[in-house]
Image (cartoon, rainbow, N blue to C red; front, side, top):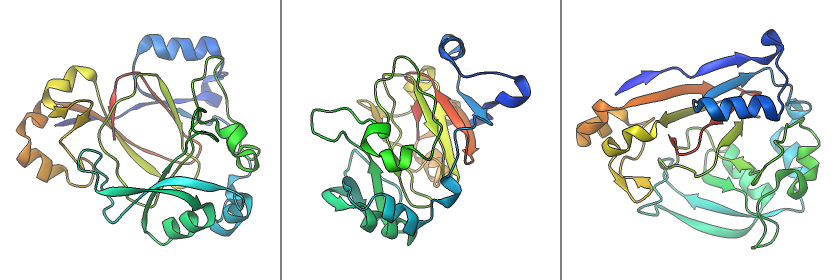
Length: 229
């Protein structure tokens, strides 16, 4: 498997403003890009565990709960836990327990909206919001958690706020070599257990992966249909 770096754009150096015209150019290009110096972080340096517990003290969340840092949607090596107190997941994540939040809407029929659902958090950020936005999702996970390889049917912006996150992306042209079962892959742990996957799934040698580590303040543009983990 060949690995390539994801192109980075320093918005301040290039004097680029994030607006719908700029976003349209990214969509048209159809390649992953990391935007640096987006000025989307404000007060997140104060996001200690206890500070976040205070900010989210009234929140009960639906989470993934398991014992393996490599989550597999196909085998469901995790369980869903509803009405989970935010303080509990925050403290458990900090201690390394396998807890993963992918936020849902305030009500079952609602789409996730980070700004409206978590106003005490969103007020600390200066997030840009494209004119056409489907949803805004809050994610919380422990160090080294890895989710299954999958794709979305919409373009995505992933904003890294606290800690670092390694990402792995594949072009849809590599689909035939990703051992897909529906829209999920049989390859699990491609970041943490790459050698084992290459031994078991030799077609992976024919793929090209975009691989990069996101730092706080980085915003990753993920074009529609790219496979990601």
